[in-house]
Image 1: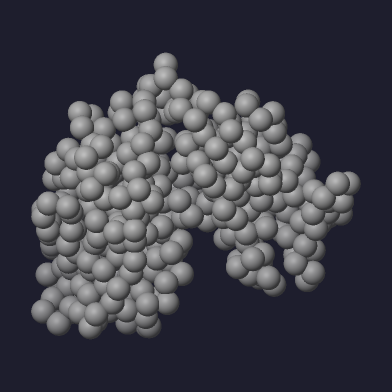
Image 2 (image 1 turned 45 degrees about the vertical axis):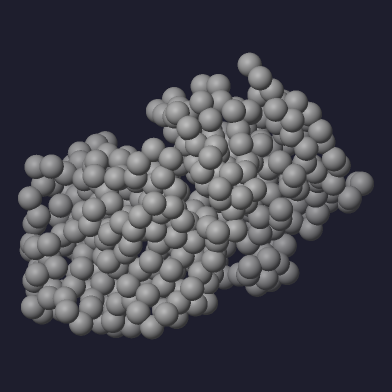
Length: 154
Length: 264
């Protein structure tokens, strides 16, 4: 198997490494870089547990080859905290009990950040529509919606 | 996934030269990468066309909207030009998948992959679309030929797609709750000289519901097609819906699309 070189920024840090071209972005993040906050759920682009930001846009990392991110910037859930300070969206999920098992939560947070960029004061409908790509089996979404509203300050 | 080499050419001539053997073009990858993960398809070489400026851009004339093949669904959905020229097309793009899929998936990729439940194929048919490749111009009616199969030749690359601006149009999709693909999707477009109706999700590829087109051409009203049941022997049956159920949904969704046209 011939490897190819990839160079990209992950959470602000430059990463250069040799990978099998088949490596998915989620595999690079989890297995190579040991950033295990990004999760693999369905592995078929439905559940959203694998959501990260690519150049600031939310994408499903299980559906992208790592090489598609070559030369670009990736932000994972770990990249949101500044030292010990939680990102406001993370804090809102914590305050509003927007999680139970926590498996979907990093994906929910990453998607919420994009949602609030488009709709700074979203309606319930806009929130539920914006989170259509993230599935939760625990919470029934009620506290997730509350968390998004709290993060939006409404 | 089977082993592959990945190329990301900077120019269109480089991209066209890179494609040999079983090589495939990679646009957003939202269908192709998933299919390759499942070994439903394979390719020893992927040519990533996302850097090619020739495949980007949206332009509008009095009669048509032309969209570059690499235009992401999110870009079509948010395009003020398309929202004004063919609002139903922008709404269709907004309804594809979810926000993450829309950030990556592209118009050209959707058409070339020809998923039987994809939304864009119904729009291409209903809006009398033409596909411009590096070799030729293909009309919508000739584009889809079989399950996951178009008339594109190996190595032929979609560069842009043009849609004819209708008087009125609407797209109604009955979504699968997890994948959000169309279990049935109906695109109705009304022109001065008649009505075109593109249907997806029901057969091995998107098709025009000519019987419904004729009835709506005579009277553009939901009651013109009430109770119409298209023959369903060649429609898809799966765990989500039987063929007869899909057939019944077509006229119901077409009627709703007509209602939406009339009320906007």
